[in-house]
Length: 358
View (cartoon, helix red, strand yellow):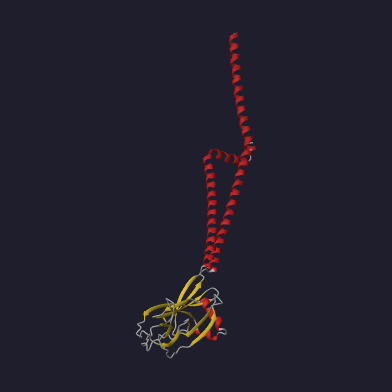
């Protein structure tokens, strides 16, 4: 009887303990659920979003790394493009200014030919020295009749001027010139045939010097013929023709227009023909000179110095260069602003992550 009651009481005690354990387990489960609800209620929506973002960031670190690398690479490419554009703009500006100065200092020669019916009669200044002018006649159509009594004085048809002046390079040198009015009718091939003689010369070689200037009228109209001839000798070239030959001189006129003044000069083509002297031996002591002056053609050569540097083209190119520089500067400004913005955003995200960790 005692054992049965004792076992019964023990079973009842165990049953009571099981019910208590069940109640305590349910109690703790209810308490945990209540704590979770309170915790969920106490968390704000912003913190939930931050936690979600943090979980996303923690879950995808390679994506964040690739984005930062792409941003840095894009930033470097933008800076390189800006430097390239700036370098090209400066190079174009330098090249434009250099080309303009080069063309300004080195003008281009423009050659044109003007056809005329007649030229202004040039001046033919001859320096015979001891030689004597025997004859001077006009002929046409390149026809020179046979010589009649060469070495003797003949009636002349030319207009001449005798001028004496001091040499331009030495005041002690006295120059004596016979200036002949040259041919003008180029269509009919007008020419002037002159004959000189020189007696008892002691020189091994004998020649007569001559000079050409543009207008014979400049000499006749000048107030001081000596000064005029001195300036002509200073500025024009001198040529010679020899004794015992017939020298045929074909002239062409060249007019050069420079930056500040115009210059006129002659170009010539000369041909020499031997004179067949048929005089008696007693008369051959007098050496004879023959000269023919004729225009080469009816074209006057006009040379102009043209500056090909156009300031308006250079200004237009420089304006385009400066516009490119302005665009590049604006591009650099936007790039810098974008870099600053990205750095601020990076710092803000970094600070937010540090605050969440704390």
